[in-house]
Image (tube, rainbow, N blue to C red; front, side):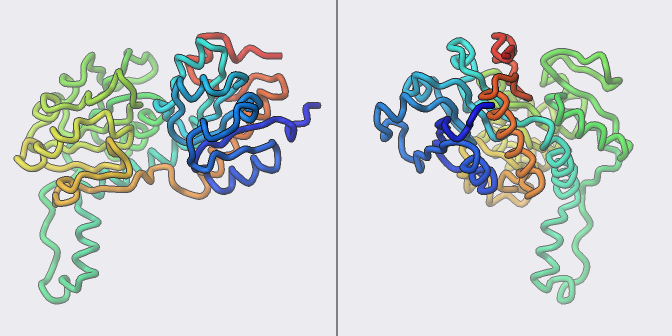
Length: 326
């Protein structure tokens, strides 16, 4: 049986506290404490066999660790990790899908309802004493009734969102890299076509070069003046400047955002808008779900260093055949 306590695992930045504690009990954890990897000595870097992280890990960072075997990413989206370079150089990359799917889908529905019914603004109205002083909160101009929803990205999370929306009685369509044969929702071969066919667009797509600013001015214009945009995917998928302009000039009616292009920075122009509901990337941020994500990070590392295939290798690693161990 492998003694994992002898295996050096680097945590280059922040990490979920419970996961960090568990990793420290299982591995020889080295922390860069937010400093560049170059701050570690050459011998320390040569000893690192695994990395556990939340966020970015570039090819240049990997090159600094000549004996790196696995990068265990805390989160389902791993666009900050150069998985292509890793696969080409025999480095396994894992992520944490499935365990956060339901939490993110639940939050998406809550964000959608909040956006169309102005629930957070209504609460602020009450807390400020305006209900008693000025009477009822104004009737909302939007509702989920009579709406049609398009989902960009019908993967695990997108499908979970769609299943929840079925209960609200709204028609559902989607745009995906390829058409699915296991759903009856209307498929659109491009994003602009989807936006033109619906009045509510939910972004559940990953980041990366293939989706960068995919929701642009043309897509927002196609969504139309009663349009609502919800983004729980990646902030980079939406052209923020185009979105701000669309919200300011009435190209679309409202937006609900949990993710932003340069987190944690949120443009002041977005903050100033009354027709934008803004959350600080909390879709999966419950103690329960974060614990499950951390458990999966640990399971992947333990499996790899015990000679077993990890539970959740990313597609690039699978394509390269790196999961075939033992």
